[in-house]
Image (cartoon, rainbow, N blue to C red):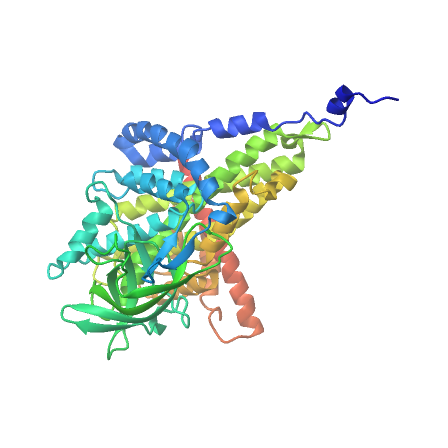
Length: 537
C-alpha cells in the first residue's frame, strides 16, 4: 500500500478542540454573570445599589477581560519577582524586579482609588471581591496591607508628625494620580505570630526613631510605606511605626531608607508577591499609636482588617472555582456523556457552588456588621461601652477570626474539588488558573495567624467574657434566625467545651477536647453562613 502525502496529512489527525469552552470562559463578565453576587449587593448596598451595580458591570469587564490575562502571564515561573542588589556602579539599590504585566496591573488596580473617600464602601468591597478572583496576582496582598495602613493612620492622627498625614493622603486619595502602596512587617525569625517576642529595636531620634534589626517575613517588599512593629530601646513592650521605603527625593535614585532587602522568599503560593527578609540599619521611622501598645494596635487594627479581607478573598476564589468548574462540566464529554451528567460529578459541582454561595453571603453579612458598627477597630474587648454594643463588637471580633480559619480551610477543599472536575487538565497551569489560586489560598491560611493559633484565641476570648456574656447568649445572637433546636444544640456544645481542657496540658482528654473544639468552630461558622445565605433568598 502506497501512503500518499495527502494520507500523511490526514492520518492520526485529532480534530478535538477546547475552543468552545475557552470562548465561553473568556467572554464571561464576572459580575454580570454572577447572580449571587448581584443578589448580595442588592440586599446590603441599599439605595446605592443601582449606582454601584452599573459601575460594577463596567469595572468587572476590566477585571475579567483585561486584568485576568495580565495576572496569568505574570504568574509564569520565569516572571517571578527577583532582586537586583547593586547597580552598575556598585551602589546598593535592592531593586525588586517584577514583570511588566504586574506593573501594569498594579497601576490600574490602585489607580481605581478603591480606598478614596469618594468611593462608597460597598462599591469598594464588591470591586475587591472581583479583584480577588484573579488570585494574588501581585496586587491582592498589597491592597489588603494598604487598607490596614490607612486605617491605622486614620485611627491615630498625630499633628506633631506631618509626614503621617502626607502618607495617609498618598495611600488613600493619591497624589497627582499616584496611589502609594502599603505593607506590614511584623514577623521575626524567632516569633512568627508571637509579636511580643519582637526584638527589632527602635532608637529615639528626636520625635522620630531609627530602626535596627531584622524582619523575616516582609510581604509587599516593593511597597512605598510599611507598618513595622519594634521595641523602643530600654523597654520590653512593642510599639508601632510607619517606615517610608525612600525618603524625599530618593525613590528615583533607588536609595532606600536605611535598610536592605536580603532576599526574596521562595513560597508555594502568592508567588507573584515579593516577600523579603529586611535588615534595618537605622531606617527613619514615624511612631503611630500609643507607645508600648504595638501588639494591641497591630492585632486590633491591621491584623483584623487583613483577616477580614482574607474572608472576602476566599469568597472570590470560590466563586471563580464554581464558575469555571461548572462551565467545564457542561462542556466536557467523557464516555459519551457530559461530565455534569454523572451523579458523582454533579454532586461535586453542587458542593462547590453551595460553599461558594454560603461563603459569599457570610462575607457580605460580616462586612455589613463591620460597617454598621462604624469600623470598630479598637484593640481588645471594650469595657467602656453599653453592654449590648460590647456584645455586638465581640460578635464581630469572633466572626472575623472564625471566617478567616474556616473560609481558608474550606476554600482549599473547594479549589481541590474544582481542579478534580477538570481531571488531568486541572493541574495544567497553562490550562487553568485554579492550581495557582489553590496555592494562594493555602498561603492565606497561614498568614495573619494559622488555624490553631486563632482557634486558641477564639476559645480564650469566649472564656474571658462569660461573666458578662454567657455562652448561650453568644450563640443565640450570632445565630439569630436559626431554629431554636440549632441554637440550643450549639449553646450546649459551647457551654460544655468551655469546661473542657481545650487549652490545658497535653493529655488524651485535652487532645479529644481540642479536636471537638475545631469541629465545633467549623460547624458553628457554617451555620452562620447558612443563615446569611437564606437571608439572601
